[in-house]
Image 1 (spheres, helix red, strand yellow):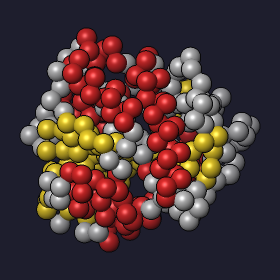
Image 2 (cartoon, helix red, strand yellow; image 1 turned 120 degrees about the horizontal axis):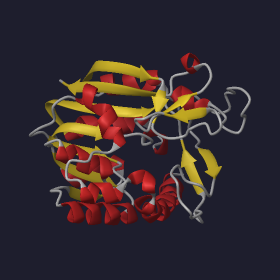
Image 3 (tube, rainbow, N blue to C red; image 1 turned 135 degrees about the vertical axis):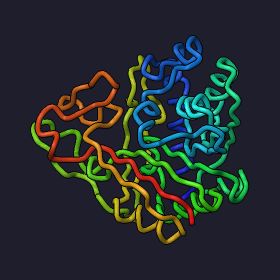
Length: 274
């Protein structure tokens, strides 16, 4: 299974990368034209992220690098890591076009310590839509702990595991159709669409994904020597997760049109290594 999920998911993300770079939703042209422009994801994160100036940071599962470059523009010394060579090609091109001093490294997230070095970083940053591609949250937490220096911190904003349980094909009510807790076997999907506006359709459609409950995530971090410093649940998420039932606000955040109080859509978790 390990080889299958990496191979299938990498092929899917390799195909997405140029489509995403060309999509207006990733705003590559604004990054190039406006030296102070930041991604909507990082703009949302800033109140809880705090001052990152001078920090040595790593962005795990960085994709085409827009959030990584945004963090560099806030003053962090950033490295981006991803397993998709096509994604990193786009990230490096964007860094060159914008003059961003960011290193991009190709490696699976579970191999990050071997690829980057142990206890080198003040900040581990992980963005939206990352954890669902990983079969073991304990291995991820062990990786985060291995990358962080003592006193270093983790910043994670992610789609809420309750959102991941909702069956998006049922449009007249919220219906739970997928696991909340981590399962040994993956959920297998076949979809030729991606989550941003694009004219293309994917040919590498099959992906393997997993959910991880909040308790599982927190417990894994605690077991690996991190202390929780914040956990905030949000009523918005930065993509149209439930088509037909959401509206987009002025910050590019999507919210439920009806009963937004009924389900959290994303969360921000902050932790520090002892």
